[in-house]
Length: 212
Image 1 (cartoon, helix red, strand yellow):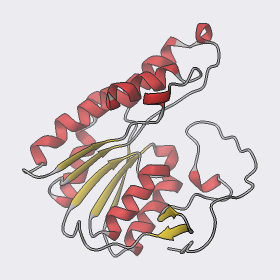
Image 2 (tube, helix red, strand yellow; image 1 turned 180 degrees about the horizontal axis):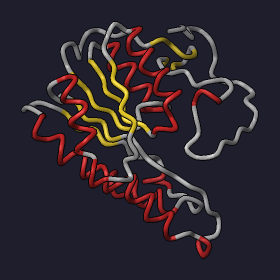
Image 3 (cartoon, rainbow, N blue to C red; image 1 turned 90 degrees about the horizontal axis):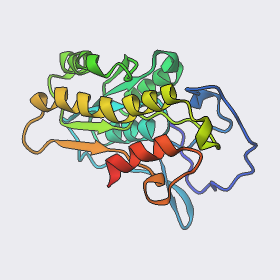
Image 4 (cartoon, helix red, strand yellow; image 1 turned 90 degrees about the vertical axis):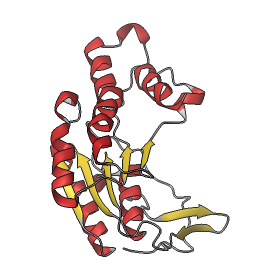
């Protein structure tokens, strides 16, 4: 894992667009996964074994926040399963390699979480490998942009709610039986919960449901 110690995050990055779901691998430059912003620029995160012997299940763990969490959990000593869309396999493979580079075991679970009634399959795959769930991170989310509220597609709204809310309830339901006292469930929300976004009303509503 390359270090970005002492470099700056302030770069002139050109506008980039991808079709959904998008790949972190195709971003230029790729985000810093393991650096924390400080007053002196990004500083590489140093683990201290706080999650040694733990097993984590992270949805949306192939890229972005999910990838950073997966790698840093591994740096703290956890084995990690990441859930991602099948078309995000390239990003997922990079994340698994990064987890392994931290000396931990990683598992890639390709699955469309919009099929929320079937997410017990995801939990079973994780438990088959690691035997338990010490940390569940509900990070997966879908967002689309529509500036004109009247033009919002209702099928898209349904898809966003299935992906962002219903699957979160479902995977938590199926995970809890494998979580002992003291385990953690972490749900990722968004700044849109508190500021709103007129172009992402459906996404904002789902994140508000999580954060408020």
